[in-house]
Image 1: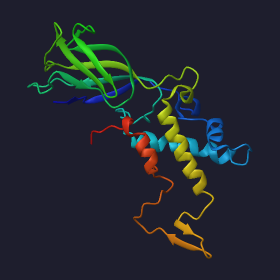
Image 2 (image 1 turned 120 degrees about the horizontal axis):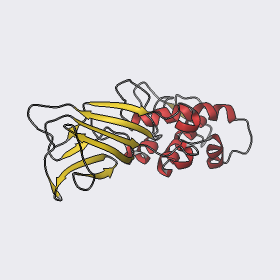
Image 3 (image 1 turned 90 degrees about the horizontal axis):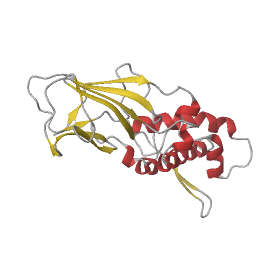
Length: 231
């Protein structure tokens, strides 16, 4: 049984700028692609926030009640489960999909502040799962209102790109590479063969060509562990 929160709020948001939200930097992209000149600097800088937004959306990071942009940067969040007449929560609460969960600040159940390791356990950070316990035995969460304040995301002490998981950054760079190279070719070409002279095939509507707003299949595979499996 999975009990999902009724409400998510952001109580301390990450700064909305490239340093705090971008999954990589122009320098890292150029190093990975072995670009030594400055000819592509402008387009790379423009593609980084686009690729970042695509990845955040594909990973299904939870939006808060105010509709603020979700991010992999660390934020302080508050999840609320409203009181209900009949308990169907079971022993585990699933925090909204902001990953990884860094810490649990407070857990208040029906007005009572619970104690970690005595009253509950954090079972994992991706996803964040809270198990209610009593004398080390799982018990059901009550029907009362439950409010959990927690921190989730990667540190932005220097920059998000410095602390992001390497798989997420690699996926972002791979996506930018595809976008960058696509900018220099006919986007409708699917394949090209030049044995005698040339043989070119073109994509059709509904085909599998990557567009400006679609993640590459290889990128989706790299991000599989970071995607919310819940529909």
